[in-house]
Amino acid sequence: MAYPPEHYGLCSNGALKIVLALVATFLIGYVVRPQLHSRESSSAQASCPCDCDCSEEFALFLPLGFINSSYADCSNDDPDIHEEMEKDIVALLSEEIALQRRVANDSLEHTRALVMDARKASLHYQKEAEKCNAQTETCEEARERAEAGLVEEYKLTAEWEKRARELGWEEDSTRVYT
Image 1: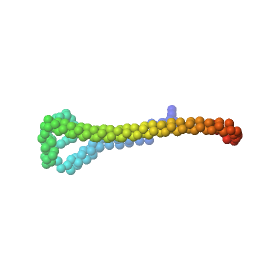
Image 2: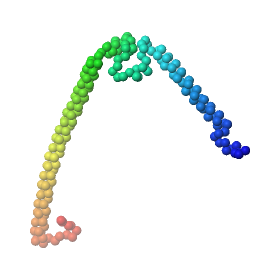
Image 3: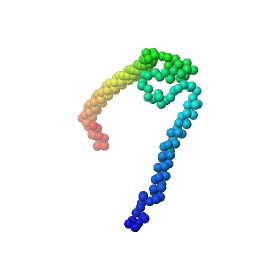
Image 4: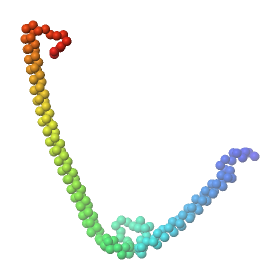
């Protein structure tokens, strides 16, 4: 014997049987699945109240804009669908344009309302800013007047202090004036 049994690895009889069983299972599933699928779709079509020939597979291969005569029987009982099916392409396009025009007008109206609200808010904030600027100017003027008054008080204090020294007043070392 050239190779001992532990060298067989994946080629052993057990591994080969498992691989064959998996392949057989997938093959059976592949063959049986379409039959199950066709039974489910036929039962779904049987429950449909429509008595027309409306195959979905055929509809997928129709070019756009092509009107299939087999759809003529579909939904004859529904007046809304019957009315839609009778319309020609010009009427459908006219309806679509009218709908888009209504949507555009609604959007434009909404945009105009938003612009008006933004203008109102802008005017409000502009008025508030003007009030704030006026109050800032008033405060600045009051500060300047207070500063001028303080300078005047310093001058008067210095004048009185000078007179007091001339009359013999001596400054206390604990008090400091600036």
